[in-house]
Length: 417
Image 1 (cartoon, rainbow, N blue to C red):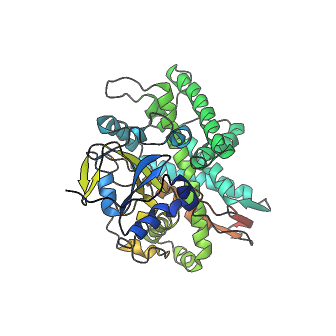
Image 2 (image 1 turned 120 degrees about the vertical axis):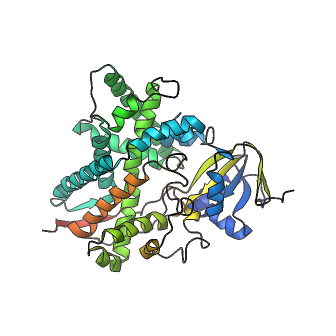
Image 3 (image 1 turned 90 degrees about the vertical axis):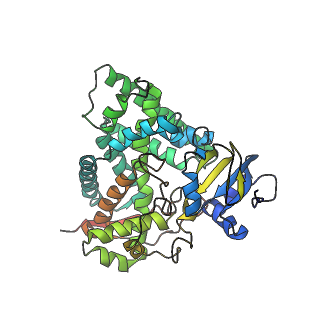
């Protein structure tokens, strides 16, 4: 026996999703008083769900699959085709093990060292400028970090173009018109360039540093012991580069939080490593990053007396789960202290997805994200002085991904001596 799932009346609600953005699923979860409901996007029946229990079900590989779930516009911009995000079962596990092998303590330490160096280089330049736009500057910092850490050689005169192309992939999936095509064209350019680089590596003309992402992915073999196709290697290398550049979104929100909550700045100046970690986690929970992720129902099943039919497109609400009052006390209040007693559930806090790192589809780069954010936080609080002039620091809950409208302008930048 099953109950009728709450459903949204009407032929299609794609425009409502675009109008409401991050709040679309959360608004309806509240109005239906249900963590699961049915709607239609682009004429297709779709289930939307959120909350801890919904995340547990969503990441059950017996109930949901990723192959074929991502919309084409997402694959043409952000994810690419045949990457790890769209794999299931043993194929996914085998590819994911390769990504997780890059997250060793030594590799993460090397990442933080490179991040420190690139921040310092940028700061030295900023001191001579009247002002900077933080979002754009940090994107370039992180592009340099990503290429050095991944072992991808880039000429100095190519950094800005590569930064712009990677940024366009991140910003274009939900866009329409020229902004969306900018992301598609950016991906095509980077995939073509990396394809040539990968061929050079395999021909012995280029030798990336041992155990870097480029080295590991180029020589990774699938379950049949075959090297990955050049196109797939390019997609997976982009997954590394793009994911690191995307941290610029979080770093802008770090700067916003430090500005809006000066009492937090004072706490952070004490140099408490644990509190810095809590602050970074609260930034990841509180501010919008990516709104939801998709999967397909793998086989018919019943959950909470609702029937889920095979191949139904399903969205998991990331933002709404991170603001669920059943999980978080006063979820719309910025409060790093909440992470002092956090139980570290893999399904209640899901800014970059949930579940298990190795066996599931949780983002392999989450540890790297946190480390890069902590280095950046230290510069913004303890190693720099700057003015934040009057500007539009508001951010949209409709645009996906979101960023403060002014992209945060700094003036009179000086290093603390």
